Length: 75
Ligand SMILES: [Zn+2]
Image (cartoon, rainbow, N blue to C red; front, side, top):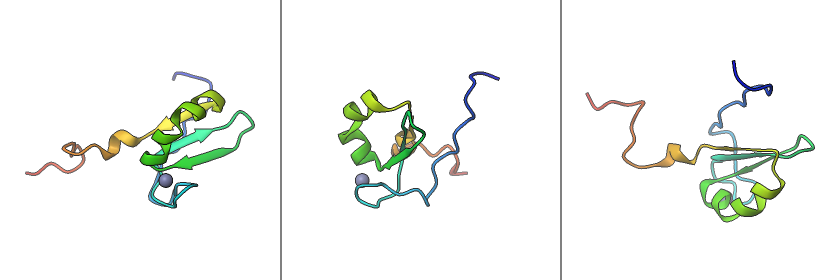
């Protein structure tokens, strides 16, 4: 086991961007314990500002990368 913090739950289709309501791929944990959710677009757009205030950033935008089909082998 590594780290003292509880592992964060993976983002799901039920997690929506606070800005536009699209599916969230970035979770920003605030020092006070609050959470912000962003889609890949807004996570990137606000990334610099968020990195300054966030206690932790969970970035799952790599799940969006085209060409990676780790979970669904073609044969
Ligand atoms: Zn968004």
